[in-house]
Structures are given as C-alpha cells and as structure tokens.
Image: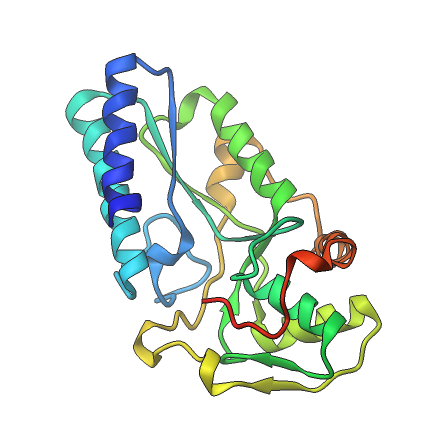
Length: 229
C-alpha cells in the first residue's frame, strides 16, 4: 500500500508541482484479475483479486484522478508479464530456468494458469513509443505480446531451449490461494499499435533463449533450493 498507492501519490504530486511534460504510470495486467473475456482490452473490468492488484488499482485511479482533476498529462501503461535477463528470482521464468540448470526436476505451483509473456526489450520499446507519442495523454494502454501460454507449457518450452528432459511437478508449497490465483491473462495490444505503431518484435523462444543464456552465466545470483515468494 505504501509503495503502490502512497508512492504513486507522491510521484503524481511531485510531477504536478514540477510541471512535468508527461507521466507514464506503470500499472500491471494483474489489475484485470482472471480474464472475463479474451483478449483483454483496456475496457476490461478491474478486479482486486489480490492485495497487490488492489493497491495497483488504487494507484491507477489516483493517476486518472490527477489527470481529470488537475490536467496532469498521464498515460496509464499496463504491461503484461515481462521477462528477461536480470529478472528477480520471484518470477516464474527465472525459477524454471534456475531449477532446470541446477536440479533433477522442476517444482512449480499450478501448471494450468495462462499468461501473456512479453520480452523485456519489447516492453521497453513499448514504453519508449508511448513516451514519444503525442496522442496518448489520458489513455490506458496495454503492452503485451498477444500470445497465451500455460505455466506447464512454458516449462516445457524452457526445457526445450536448454536441451533438458526433466519431470515437472506441482508443489503444494508453491500454490497460490485458490481465489487469488489469476487463471488467465492474454493481452489485446491493438490499441498500442494504433496509437504508437508499437508491436512486439521478439518471439517467446527468442526471449527465452536470451534470458536462459544470461541466467546460466550468472547462476550464482540465484538459489534453486529456496522458494522466493
């Protein structure tokens, strides 16, 4: 709450006082909760399905309020699941890669939920395109790949990239509380394309290859025996 809501409030107030030309407020696809329809466009209802998503919704509403009330030039950016080199061990892709390189099996939470994974270079390009485009003030814009994959299939993809053949198991200790688990996310990225011309350039496999190579070279930064929440 302090970081997502109060922190955002501080940024918005400072931007207003400083007369900033444009604020890109970073939201998250988690504010949509489990998809009520796919692909998820920017009109999809918001759902506080977890404390994290609830505080991010609060931050989004503050950003919108500052735009409507004070004319602050804000664009709300909703990136879907970004991945790439240097990513925290909390994220699922580094978790799978580290286990594949260090263990005799892959232990994950639920394997059925789907996500829209976007390689970090594409996410950065999306933010830059929004920063440079004049017609996005007051808009909410998704940044996603438009591809959907289950966590189980993702693990198989990563094993293929690494040339590994390991069993994949559901670990009860890693399963999120049932009602907080977001079961499905798939971005409709057409609005970002129309407003800025942005579209993803990297395939999932290309992004996984770059990420796996980086983690393999920096494996000492990760621990396969610790479940990072």
